[in-house]
Length: 415
Image 1 (cartoon, rainbow, N blue to C red):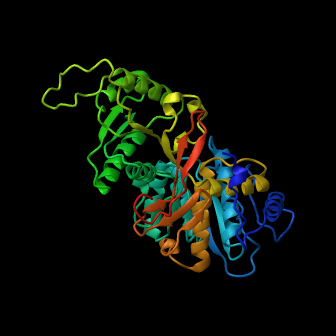
Image 2 (cartoon, rainbow, N blue to C red; image 1 turned 60 degrees about the horizontal axis):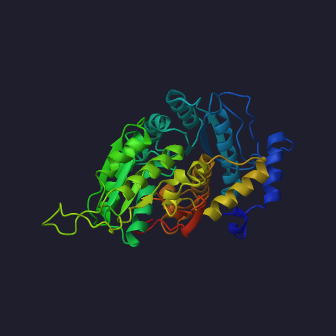
Image 3 (cartoon, rainbow, N blue to C red; image 1 turned 45 degrees about the vertical axis):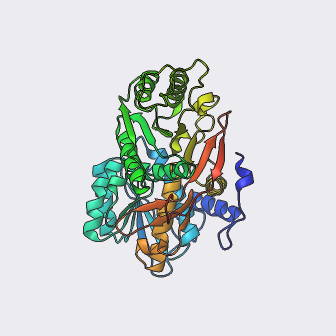
């Protein structure tokens, strides 16, 4: 859907797009001593801090980013997002110090130790689950909050929050929406990967929380031909109301097409339990198949376009207005479109800056009201749990996403 129609009025008090663009350009070029000191991409290790020139006590957070190595371009984009967050939340009094992780767990742990030794009171990043696992004990031993970009909820815990959109958040939202629409019996077909297993655990938890029957789970080898995987799944799922497909791209399209073909070819179960083998009349129509569900990976997935079996499929996704606003501001400041993970970097940096500015624990910031993040509302809970408000989309027959339900505030059932 066109993003321009979804942009709300700018919040009062935030810097204008022109102001942000000017600040970013001044920072990049180093034209003023009062402009933010923004590092370029040609360095390794310690970079100049991002923040206003010293004029009083400064609170410091470290940005743990892959600023060298194969993920350096992504690290630069996340640093850009952190710059926007700093100006939004704490244009004075807070300083971000970028630290290069090199994209490795050992590099991330070393960067965290160095940052804490230099006075960092919050850690923003790192990027991957393995890096977050290496940094978490360093942060906990120092009593410093860690806001990581990964979507691996296993990394969350006391003093550690993950800001990526987790499988649990996605599954809970789409299952609750389908249940309100009447679905009671759920199933999952997914590759037997870390992501697929996370979806399975999330589906079991979501159905249990809603008092629904235990779901059917069919995990297939990651390299299985999608049509064969659909055949194996179909044999277990004749009586389900909704099927969550844990594939994306071309594999999701081929799986859905094969599953729909098998569904139309199979006769319905006999209505008389006492005579399960009774002949089916020639005029009997095949039962409608289960509603197909997907993940946030389906948003703007061009490979799904034009597949009839996916028309009407539901999936969770970010708040369109919030994402459009974030992308527009980022483009004006940095002349490029941000990658998806930049939204998690913005949210983590903004929450860290707000906590330092107000001298408050990170989880207390959203105790009474959700934080309006780059992709919708976010709420942090004690113990490391992160709640995200997600919207529900349906794929049109042409493959375009249509908004069904706006992003819900992540505070009650079905967030």
